[in-house]
Image 1 (cartoon, rainbow, N blue to C red):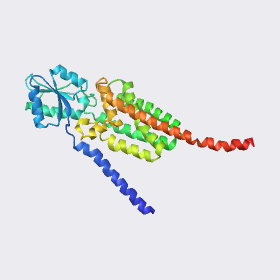
Image 2 (image 1 turned 45 degrees about the vertical axis):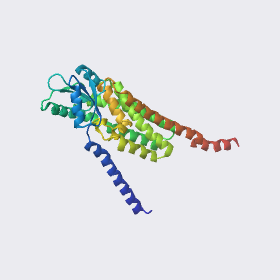
Image 3 (image 1 turned 120 degrees about the vertical axis):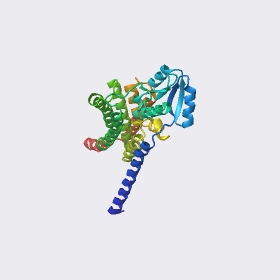
Image 4 (image 1 turned 180 degrees about the vertical axis):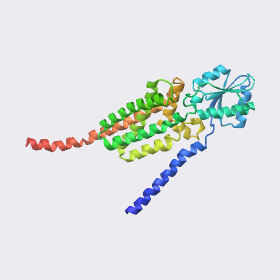
Length: 327
């Protein structure tokens, strides 16, 4: 293939990648709607409200019936539901948690207005978002930099550093320093996240470790193609389906659920749990991040075993010199 044909092929491939990225990022945003969104209905009219919700859209909500408003607040604080409709106190009122996702709280607020038949329906924000980031814009903007920096770190470690052991040291350094630095900016400068600094830094560092470790581990085993495979997975699936600006249950399925099995989605969910809910609901995303981090370390371990089996180039070059000296 001559240079012109090769250039045309590269241009076509880049155009296809552009189309895929547009679909991956725009399609989820254009199709946000409740899909088995967990909510609670409390009070004496709970059965009637539940039937009304099911009649309007049977697939929109996964409803849990609770006895009263106190139980509904507890369920929200434990991240069991995103909101609750409380009946028996006049017009139905809505309890929401903007910290769990401003997009969800907005939709639930609109639903409260429909149920009450007035634009002034009472809404209580049980777990509010940070006052410096009430719409979650800064929070949602943190996911892509974490992904991009992890991809860049993994690629650079493969291209610049030789040896699986040295690359492992680089990945661990990136995870620790990157986690501490990113949360220093998010909390200290941007004031976008409340909660324990070290716990949040550990979440960010674990996410960075998972992304960078898998990238450099794949590349160490299969070559530069590993960078492409890992990067496309994190960018085309992990980031747009992370639900950092919405909620997994608002995204088209099964992509919303798949997004939570990748580092960007798991990191976003765990950061919310640690920052706003005292860790409630954080076990699943924590396990996901630990699995990705362990996978990256395992890939680097396999690369180290292969290097040991093949022998290091330095050792092979030294053998003739030793033999010549002995002669």
